[in-house]
Every structure is written in structure tokens, then in C-alpha cells.
Image (cartoon, rainbow, N blue to C red; front, side, top):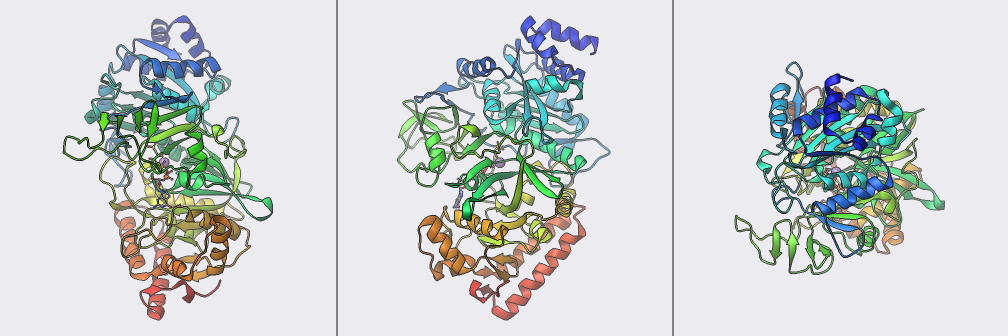
Length: 627
Ligand code: GTP
Ligand code: SPV
Ligand code: MN
């Protein structure tokens, strides 16, 4: 190790922490920690191992420093983020791009040298008077090809506590790997905080990704999506790694779906933030293996998938006893849960859409709150933020899939793509093949912006494969990688398109929130070739009789022909204008789009126009032939 790094560590760490840190034989790692200490200048440094005592110490410190407060139920705590720090900040998140390189125009970026000095300038002395925590963790199951070691230095014990709930511990792994570890590094500081321990200088919030060194800098923010480095910050680096190594890193849930005869079939699904991953992975009676980030590898022609994470940072809005019994239960019994940005009164949490009246007063993300309280612009402040969340370890859920830590992953049978599309896409359909599904559902995904991202809600946009925010390579290359991946598989997973947010002419959703369970069961049957389908211009769609039976079995409901027609009538003009927007997006914003994408979309348009000539603008599903 460089003499100067060792000197610095010796002068800033006490014996215990120096010993723990230097037990890892990796110069590059020690250099990163030394750099973080030198730059951020903390008063003290604590290096956490994987031991139960250290995990417990972390919990205690988060409470002692008042970044979290205990609630009535044992193990439950509340953390608040500042009023202006309630979601991922797209505008402040940038790739640091060396002068000679280019990324797609849509990816937020800045020249590397300038960006580095800006963010490092903001981090200078940012931890003065505070303690820095050094954390070792791993993405993916341990002892696995999927595994990626990560180190995060942060001055937030809330962030560090969240890491313990959401990821596998990695100190022992770093020790084992020594100088062989190829790891990601994250440096985070909350920056200046007020008496509520929330970041105050959010106008100086920056999240900069230096992919040339696999390092992320995050400052003046606490919201987990901007600070818990293994989540979306590392995902951006992982996508580059996967690109180099020929596998895929995806913004997808993983779930085991039960079929006839006791079989279980694994599915993955990509939905933009706040569009349905957790809700789909949590369907009652099925198992959850992951709800946000999945890795895929082609192994002997099979598509194997693993969860990068081991916990959930889930949206709490609309979690209610009827629709989400498993998670409702976990949130109402003792056990380790961090609530964020809900309303607290008398030690109890309240949120929007919980199926009962929330308290009229208490503390929330705005401070002391009462019903009717207004913000600076005169708008009423809701009891809880829409993006209020809970963090829990997956192993604490009764419906956790037993294969969560399987180093080999699970074999996938199906993949779904879905967004908030009010007008065009059908509720559920199957692509004609891998290429068609990836291109017309994934690479054509149109959705509305949500509360998970700071800014205006409900603005339609294309969000390529639901992962555009995190793609750190040219977007066209990303599509190409997905297409190529399918060619390595003997039986590629079937690709489905879903849309939980289709509306009728009066603006009402055409489906209920539990209908997705029927679609998922239909897909399960399709992956085993158990049921037929109809052939429409945009994909294969479920038959009325099959859905009728599933609605009955799964939801105990009758499914009328009118419901079917209302939900599955193909809206040709809406689909054609969506196609136009998608083509324009790829022509003007993506660059390097594979040629085949335009061909597949051209064929799709032709099928739509032919069907329109034959049946008119709005085509009843009963008009489609069987496959
Ligand atoms: P991230 O954690 O941000 O990546 O989001 P996610 O994709 O896991 O989203 P999640 O499943 O938590 O759902 C987000 C929101 O969509 C919640 O407010 C749900 O209530 C709502 N939602 C989920 N399913 C449906 C549905 O079928 N219909 C309608 N109308 N809303 C739904
Ligand atoms: C998302 O926004 O996609 C999330 C939550 O899953 S965050 O941690 O903000 O990324
Ligand atoms: Mn997400």
C-alpha cells in the first residue's frame, strides 16, 4: 500500500478499526477509504464487520443519533427525509463522461473532470464533527458468479442500517477475496443537517457516477434511492459490468408463481418506479424472490436469474389488509422495519390508502403536521408522502422464496414489461417471440412519470425497458444486448406485455388491482403450453374462456363478456400513434438502435393497419383468430 495512505489510516483510526480494516488485503480498497477520510474529514471512523454485535451497534447508533426513532412495535423505527428530498433526483444524477467518450443524449451527463471537482468540492469536510461508517456488502448471492463486492463510506447510520436490511453482508467476502476483489465504491455524505437530522442543502444535492473508476459520489441527500449505494447507484455501474461480461442487469422483480399439480414457475418483470414490481411480486399465495433488481446469466442455454438485493424498499401507499395481506402483516407485528416518510402519531405509522382513516395530526416529512396544513405555496400537505416507504429483509416475509440465496439463481420461464399507459397497450399479451417481445414491450415502453422521482407526476414519456434512468451505456447497445442474450438461450423465456393502468373514455381504470394475479396465472399456463391464445396485431392475447375460469379460481369472481371486451378491445389509432412516438424516440434520442428494432416496429404497424382496414379502429378481442 502507498505509504501515505497507511499513514493517514493509522492517524485517523483507532486500534480496533485499523485492525478490522487492514485485515482486508486490498490496496485499492484501502486507498478508497483513505481518500474518503481525507476528503470528508470525519471526526471518527467506524468499520463494520458482519458480526451480530456490529449489526446491533448500527441499529443503536441510528437511534442514538436520531436519524431513526423507535415506534411502539418492537424493532420498528421511523426515518424522515427532508421536505425537498423525497425521491430520486434525476436532474442531479449525472454520469461523469471523459471528454473522448459519448453516451446517448437522453442520459444526464457532465464532463468528468469538471464534475469530479464539483462533487468532491461539495464533499470536502462534509463529515466534520461526525462519524464515518465503512461498510462492506455484496450484490447478488454470496459465493456466486452473480456476486459483486461493494464498499460504502457514509456518515448516515440510517443509510448503513438500510444496507443491513437490503443487502448481503460482505466483510468476510472482502477478506476472502483480498486483492482479487473487483468492487464498486460509494462515498456518501448527508451534508449539513438540521435539528431533525435531515439534509438541508438539497439545492446542492449531487449524485455523480464515475464509471471509469466504479465509484459513486452522493452528497446533500438522504433519500435511500439517492444514498443507499447498492441500490440504483450501483445498478448503473453493474449495467456497464454486465455489458463487458455479456450478462444482463435489470430493473425487475423475481417471483415464483404456482401452477397446476403443485409446480412453481419463475417470472421476472420490469416496471418503471412505482408502476408495479413489488405489487406483482407480492401476490398472495405466490413467492417473492426479489422486487427491484435482477441479474440474468445464460448458463448452458438456460436463463438463470438472481436477486441483487435481499430486502425490500417498498412503496407503502395503498398497502392495505385486503390487497396486500402479506406485507400488511409484516408491518403490523414486531420485527425489524424502517418506515420512511409516513405519518407518526403516538408511536404508530399512518399512510395514504391504508384502508382506514389516518390520524389527523402527528409528525411527518413536513415536521409537526395537522390535517389542513399547507406548504409554502399554499398547497395542502398530505398526511404522508406518496413515496413513503418501508424497508424489510426478505427473509422476514412468510412468502419469501426459498431460493433467494441460491448461488446458481433460478431458471426463468417468463418476463413481463409494463408501465402506466392510460391509452394504448392491452392489459396482458404475449410477444410472438423473444425479439418481438423485447422490442415492442420493452424497448417501446411508454409510461407516466410517478412520485418516486422528484418533479411533475403523470407526464407521459418513453422509459426504455423500465430502466432508462440507470442505463450507463448507449441505449441502443442496451437493447442490442437484450436481443443477443435471447440468442444464447435454448428456450428463451416467453416475453409478455402488461398494462395495469389502461383507462376507459371516462378516465376510469379498466382493471382492478387484483386482476394482475389472473394475468400472471395465465402467463404461467402459457409457459407450459397448457392453454391456447388469440393472435392480435400487437401480440397473442388470452381467450375469454380461459380468463373466465381463472377469474373464478383466483379471485372468486365472475368475468363477463362485457368486461373482457372493455379490457381487451384493441385501440388501433392509439397504438399507431404510440408506435410513431417510439420510432421517433429511437431515431432522435437513442443512437445505435439496432436496425431490427425498426423492422419489427414496421411489421407491427403493418399488422395494425391491415387489422384496421378489416375491422375498424376499435377491434373486439372476439374478432381475433386462434393461434
Ligand atoms: P419502485 O419500488 O419505485 O421501483 O416501484 P414498484 O414498481 O415496485 O411499484 P409498486 O408495485 O410498489 O406499485 C406502485 C404503485 O402502483 C402503488 O401506489 C400501487 O398502489 C399502484 N398499483 C399497483 N398495482 C396497481 C394496479 O393494478 N392498478 C392500479 N391502479 N394501481 C396499482
Ligand atoms: C425506484 O425508484 O425505482 C425504487 C426506489 O425502487 S429507489 O430506491 O428510489 O430507487
Ligand atoms: Mn425500483
